Image 1 (cartoon, one colour):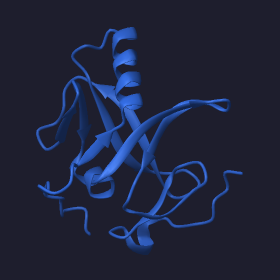
Image 2 (tube, rainbow, N blue to C red):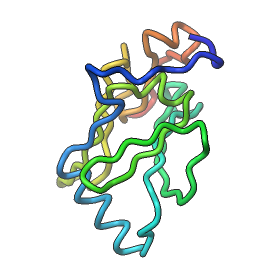
Image 3 (cartoon, rainbow, N blue to C red):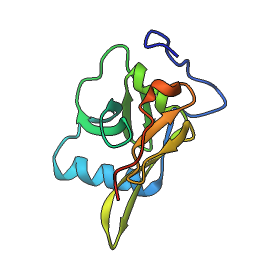
Image 4 (cartoon, helix red, strand yellow):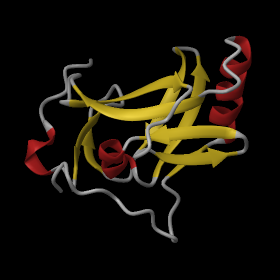
Length: 136
């Protein structure tokens, strides 16, 4: 899929889902940082041991071309390019003995790095930066 093609939202699948743990943690962070007018931008960028990595940041003003999903009062903002990689993904928050953090389960990933970074999707083809994982 080229950078000029965009995903059209489908009736049969949510663009992105959040687990109750993720919703709770995002709300907690918004409250603690007093970012009541912000949403969570989720994006895909180049880098990491697998060539492509996920990112998240709070943002107050989405762009006109962004796809916005609201789940239980939490606004998730995704740019059109990232949406091609993330469509159908689920965000969770995991807190365990090794620490806590957000985790993205992506049905589009055909391979991934051990640290949770996206290596390649069916749409990205071999240009998606598939490579060995150096996250041991």
